[in-house]
Amino acid sequence: MPWVVSYHGPTASTPAARQMRMLGIEPRVQVVVESFLVVPTLVAGSDRIALLQRRLIDLLPLNVGVRALTPPFDAGPLIEAMWWHPVYDDDPEHIYLRDVLVRAAHQAIGGAAEGV
Image 1 (cartoon, rainbow, N blue to C red):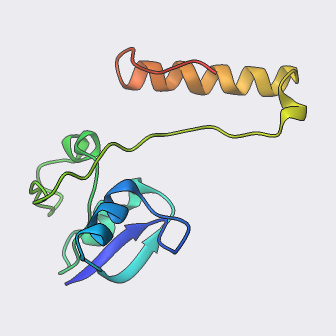
Image 2 (image 1 turned 180 degrees about the vertical axis):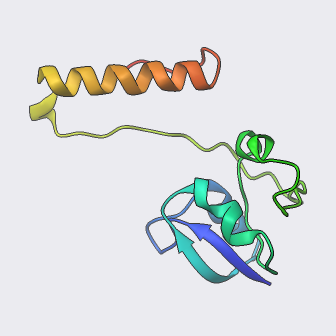
Image 3 (image 1 turned 90 degrees about the vertical axis):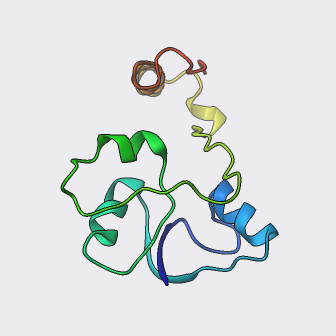
């Protein structure tokens, strides 16, 4: 089956993709995307499959044409991180942006976001 994946490559992949490689599973990649949010639209109505976070699956409308199954292996956690050059540590605009992102993540996952 053809796969829809995000961040696919030798140095760019998700924890789930690395776990599949360790298990000897090499998906036949047909589409590579840079955002998990577009994955359902590329899977619906096709024979493609993908791995997607449960939180995003739960947000899909019931009639979107995507069926959710539990993978037969532990996909591991997906950790979001922010990286920036130290020159921006004290930049007011950068501090503001980091604060907005941390508060948004905190709100989205119910209080488990770590500060920067």
